[in-house]
Length: 292
Ligand code: GUN
Image 1 (cartoon, rainbow, N blue to C red):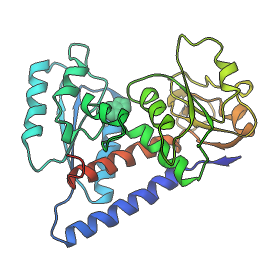
Image 2 (cartoon, rainbow, N blue to C red):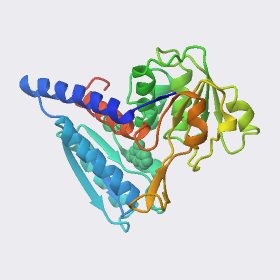
Image 3 (cartoon, rainbow, N blue to C red):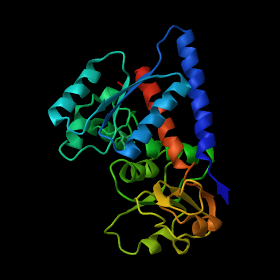
Image 4 (tube, protein in one colour):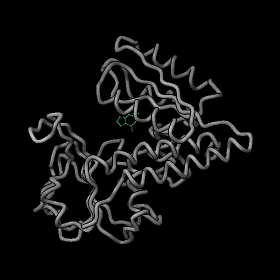
């Protein structure tokens, strides 16, 4: 069994991005600039946005963070997005999700100019992805593809099972794994809450990508020997074995599943760090105006 070290790979990719940014600056270009909008005080969202801002600085990007209270109205938030849309010094914009209930996520996403939508959530960019046109790929699926590539994990003709059909991870992941590409070409099954007999399906899988948000959902009996398992879940649970009293676990029962795998991502240190790296890659692409 080989651990897929997302922390190490993300550090490598960040170095590559930093070197490219240095070259851009030397040639008189400007630093890529990512803006993040965050609404309210959700602890996990604040942690994610802080990590994204930190990563920007590590690779030499500019970043701006715009924080608003829960009480902001939808119209006010859309007006703030419009300001960033019009600001030529900002290349990429993300609005951290989830948003308060009184604000429509789809309205927010559709207000971001597709040129600046470095999350790849705008319907225009989702459509381009499905049509295999150049676009911003959503960060978590793109990060997973990067891990499979860098670990030279064979995907062509393999059975890939994706568990979870969210707009952010499961659905785009299933598209990327099935498409004709150096790290696609899989036969993909997309499982979700209405799927019957998930264990029967996962036992046939060469690659299992678990993104349904249920702690330790995938157990040892659901995995065939030699499979590659990618764990997108992250949950903080109480533990009397750690100093902090908390520990992070994924959607995979690691202790049961890992011994059966050829490759597996740990939690933390697997998929998580790659998500941020993909966002940086998209922001670099945005600053070079390579797509729009
Ligand atoms: N919330 C959870 N994941 C994401 C993400 O990738 N982007 C944004 N904007 N919000 C998220």
